Structures are given as C-alpha cells and as structure tokens.
Length: 501
Image (cartoon, one colour):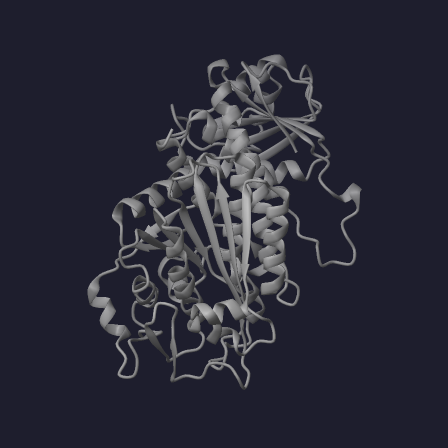
C-alpha cells in the first residue's frame, strides 16, 4: 500500500474515494462541509433523506456527486459533535470506513477523518490508527487454500492519503513510518498464528526466525536444539516435548539498535505450536484453535520484524520456547515431578498447564542477557478469558513502573491490558507435598496462580506477564489471529526508545 500525507485543507481531490466524517443529527465535519460546498450542497441534500444518522462507524457510499471530483464520497459516522471525539468513536469510524472502502472498486482514497480532533491522539497516532485499521481490514489469509482469490476479486485499493494541517505533517509522517513497520510485523504474526499445526511446527518457527535474521542486518538469530537444552538442564521444557514427534526449539532473536552497552528488553513468547493438553486431554470442541497456542511466540517474532523495519534505537531480545503438547506413552503424566533449568522442582498435576513449564525455562535462560526488563507473552489460561473477555489482555508483574508503562502503551495503542493482583497469598495454592511447587493451583484465580508460578523464576528481575488467551485470536465466522499484543508491545518499545532520546 502506498501511504502518504496530504497537507492542508481537503479541497476537491481527484481520487477514487474521499472519506469524510458526519456527526449525529446530520452535522457536517469541517472536511465534509468544505466538500459539500464544492458540490453545491449535494451531501447536505442526501443527509436530509435520513439515510445516515452519524452513529460511530455508520457508512453511506455516494457516487458521482455533482461538482465533486472524486468518483465516490464515503460518509462515515463520528458520533456526537464535539471539539474532540473520543478514541473509541474514532476507531469505530475508522473500522467502518475501511470495511466499506475495501468493498468498492476504488484504486485510491483520501481520508479526511485524520483532520478530526481526537481525545488523547496527536496526528502521529491518528494517522497510525487509520493505516492500521486499513491494513487489518485488507488482511486476507489464503496460504493453505488451493484456490486463491482472483485478482479482480481482491480490493484494488493501492494509494491512500491522509489529510492533516500543515503543521502536523511531520508528526503524521512519523505515524505512517510506525504504521508501515507495525503492519509488516502484524502480517508475520498473523500468518504464523493462522498456519495449521502440521505446517507451523517448532522447526518451522525456527526456520522463519532464521529467514528473518537473513533479511535484516540488525537481527542475530540463535536456535537452541534438544541436545543443548539437555546440557542446560531445561527439564521443564523438555518434559512437555516428550509426547511429540516434533523436537522442541528455543528461538533467540537479538535486535541491536541501541548503544552496545545498553541492557536489552527481553520478550519471552510462548510457542506451543499445537496444544492437545497432553494426557490431560482437552475436549474435542474447538481443539483446532489450539494451533493459536503459539500466538505469544508469533507476536515476539512479529515485534522483531517491526523493530528491524522501524530501526528503533533500542536493544531487544526475543526468546521463543517452541514445542508441541500431545498425548503419548512418553508424555508427562499427572503426578510426575520434573526439574526446571533453575533447579526448582515441579509436580505436574495437570499436563494441560504446560505453557508455564516451557516459559519457566525460557525465563531462566533469559537471565544470560542481563535484561533491563523482561516481559513474557502467552496464551496461558482460560481463566483470563472468563475474567476479562475479549477487550483486554491480563497483565501482572513484580515491578509497578514496568506494569504502568505497559498499561499506558495499551491505552495509546488501543491494544489494552488490565492489571490483576500478584499477591503473596495466592502462592499458597501452588504448594506441593512432593516438589517445590505444583504446576496448577486449582480453579480459583487461575490466571493469577499461573503468574505466581512464573514469578518464582523472575525473582530479582523486573518482570511482567501478559496473558493473551482471550485477545490473540477471534473465533466463529471471523476466526483468525488478531496480531495482539504486537501493537501494545511496539508502543511500549517506541515509548521506551523515546525516553532514551
């Protein structure tokens, strides 16, 4: 997609489609009023018919209006008229506009929604939001289909310009640069997560990381294989892989964009390429969606790609423990005791609580990078789905400054998280008579006790945990990876790099 910024007033652009906002009660935004004047009141005349109420995200497509050079005019509802519209209404307007636009034959478009004043959004964020909304609307997975969509069936849109005032252009261009990088990372994240488990195996994930390293000079990739894991004493990770014919991999991607001595941010992403639950077998219904259990790992690889594209002045290391969790004669059994890389022993009461087993060894391994902070990302607990639903990822951590920075990044990016408590009282649920800890703590507070388990491997580290079990993919008719929490993570890294100048 050819993205650009159009400076100054909207004017009367000669384009495939011009997108303007409409408030409730048929009130025109500044850009819509200017366009209406060019057309001799044609837009106002249409609105009087009552076909458009101005509700956030509501759209009405008009063709060949007199006096207007654009082939189409797309009216988009922005909610109640105000000096600033809310971020939620702005995103609804963008989503509605992009979904409507992709269904047209327009080859080019000019978006005037970005000239609206939006609460808490500067021009960079407004433009970035708009470009990401369009990229998400146009994303199409067809990799494993024998028949691809014909060219004529694909949206023909190739050029999009975003309208900003003259003084906002530099900020808008920065937002576009960020959007391009994020879209590249999101495309990789979604593709990896959407691939079926028979293709996207631990070895395949490792190969994709190697390709990423070959494509970018700023990325160094190391793959730790099974024999090396044994030497390192990664008994927890290896125990999960025992039931699979696919060998595990520990994928390490280092991005060096900052100063040589600058300590890195370490991102640890769960890479369970398929999770049947092991001996504690999952129910058959929706088990196909367990290919998404590597979404944390996919997001980490996507972040590394986005970092390389954006060239942020920061050092970041991605660590992805990759495995399958299947039932087999060699698989973990309830009651087994394994020894993690840290030397701590774990009684496995439920083999379906395997994500924390591969993460704990990866977290211990991450210490060798002397990280400034560590954030792990995992589709870890169904309890988080029940607690928070789809809007927010669960967030827990032992460093409130880090947690606050992630919460802020979630608000700015629209990829929100919600903090849950990590109180010492919850640790008692992990007590075991046969090992240092059990791998589950019962039904109560399942998301919290999972984080408590991980906290035992992050003492003296500044650490946070993102549970993305509810946010990493959508089910039903629109089944597919969302790419979350890549926007949150990238906003956190952008903010962090900005603080360092």
